Length: 148
Image 1 (cartoon, rainbow, N blue to C red):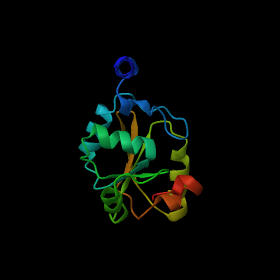
Image 2 (image 1 turned 180 degrees about the vertical axis):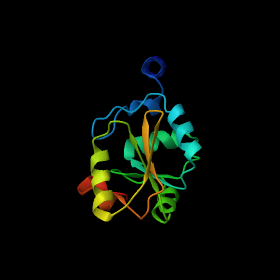
Image 3 (image 1 turned 90 degrees about the vertical axis):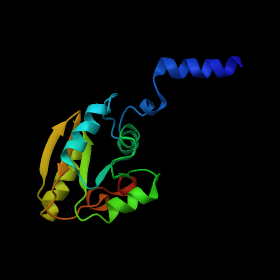
Image 4 (image 1 turned 180 degrees about the horizontal axis):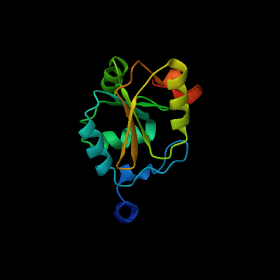
């Protein structure tokens, strides 16, 4: 019984378990309160969103799984969401503000002639209204491009 209380005390002291993934794989800190980021995304009504693995999971959790969001750079957790984004005509992309991977995304947009609308809020950067399809394999290589 003492062990259970010890674990509960650790979780209470450290915050909720979803807050435990505090940075992206590139080391960019993820905001500890994603509520403003979720509100920001909901205001822009993206039909589908690509996001880095850690960010994707936290956004899904904080939105109550209301966002059609799929992850790259890690194992697929929710296959139906992944397929929804993979088959969308123009999925948006979201990054944590300051993420160095934004440069790779912008370079891929230039290479493929894809235009977009950029919006920022809640510690996030959203690229939406893409003029053409862009998937993780078009932007990244290796593990970063992994979507399954």
